[in-house]
Image (cartoon, rainbow, N blue to C red; front, side):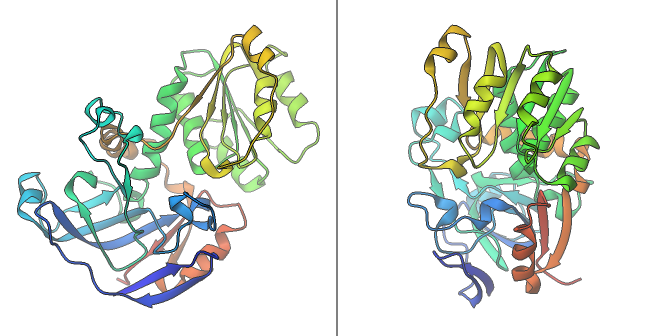
Length: 338
């Protein structure tokens, strides 16, 4: 089968690889229809970072079941079903998995990516796509689950304020969800004018240009210098953590969500955290339950415009070049011609 291959240096080439087959009873073979890609797929040369390893990139996919084992049939799957998948395989046996905290699984495994013609996943990794979603939109089930897991940790209540630093797909979705939950003021800090405009069309009250030297003061003014009830620090630059500490209200919460700052150190004044009762939390991955919830909620969110470009599989290299502009929360890659 034809597959896109990413080296440790970040270079991309097409390769012909052996087509995977069903071996275990819970294996499911999927004919891949679409992928969506993000800045995560651009990462390379980082120790212990599964996104940056050499191999097939792409972690957000849709496809049709082509073959499956006996246990997968018992689990409710059948040939011809449209599905999405998580690349993460949770053990289901550790204490965290038993408590539905799969994102803390101590034996977490990560499968190869899905920018190829076929993949084989375990039935526990799959979600059946709801009716009404296009093959392209099904890809967003997985990244939406990331946002849902994060928003659940914010504990936002009606009338509160939220600031999201960085208008990535996950950041924009968190802002949109917060607006729907009744947040009074939702702000996004983002360098791209294209994404700032997208944010304002999706429930964001204020979209601030992060390149503006006065942007921190602008954010202070939006809350009359009282601070935001919650701040999502979603940038690749952890020095923004100090901005977040300065901007969050007393008793507020800061949520760290972007692992692209992997291995970086940042200095901060813990005294300010303590006397202002500021809490810091993190959000990483999601549970199986959140994936299922994502599939149910996605049709109601109308995120079609978050996928701003589409390329054929043969044009994958162009798709990754376009991604580097920072103007596209998601880019779709169509794996098969009609």
